[in-house]
Amino acid sequence: MRKLVLVLILFSLCSGLMFAQGTKWVMQEVLESPVSRVKVDQLNNIYGILKGEIVKYDTEGKLLTRYSNKLIGEDVKLDVTNPMKVILYSEDQMRLIFLDSRLGELRQEINLFNQGYEQISLAATSHSNGFWLYDPINFKLIRFDQYFKKERESLNIAQLLRVEFYPTDILEVDNKVYLTDPKNGIYVFDIYGNYIKRLPLKGVNELHINDRRLFFERGGKLFGLNLVNQAEESVQIETPVGSSFALNRNMICLVSSKGIIIYKPEE
Image 1 (tube, rainbow, N blue to C red):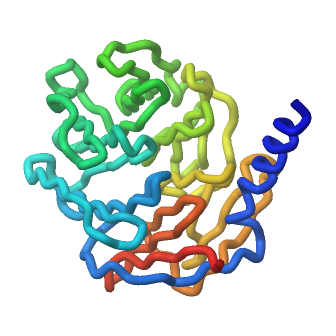
Image 2: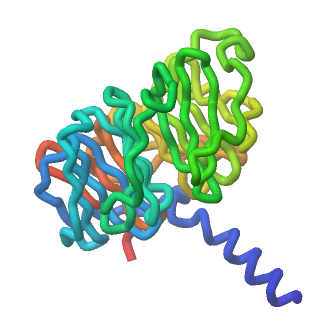
């Protein structure tokens, strides 16, 4: 029993080492793929997004597969929290699509207009194969199970917080749901949609949370906000950080005019 406890403690201590101060990140390669945004899952797969097309690469930059659907429009959101059930959402078309690890459609897409919603701006993966939607008309978080059965919804967030609330991204991590409003900060809820607190970090359009840190760009540099002690930590990479980046504990990917730049920690 003592050995098990020791192993768990060591794992906990080591889990944050990749993003500790002083970690040196080295550029590995550039994927010459024209993309507008990039995502990275926990299996080290890389996803490039461009005008309704998703291109997936492995950790070495080898093309694995692609998904193309010109009918969903150009402005799509991708959540790769669960690599086995990727969420693709088009706000313009109000279409919600679930993709498997090969980027094949898992089920018939969900047209949210047909489900009675006037507008849904955000969608995200939730635990137990569920998912979240954000209703900007009623200012509510809504959780559905894997069968598209509504389980719960939050109170009117704008009324609750007494702010003009216009979130641009949503993410569930470690039994918490994060909504970022670039004007006001990042709002944290529990998995039942109950408000917990606000992180006063403004100007964040897209959420990147890994290793108990929330990562963001400021002045072309990459920083991490430690969610445990609220300390800011800089991430040492040479390339200026633009509007789109993605990361996990093993790599950092940046979108540039050349394509996707891949950084990995120095061995």
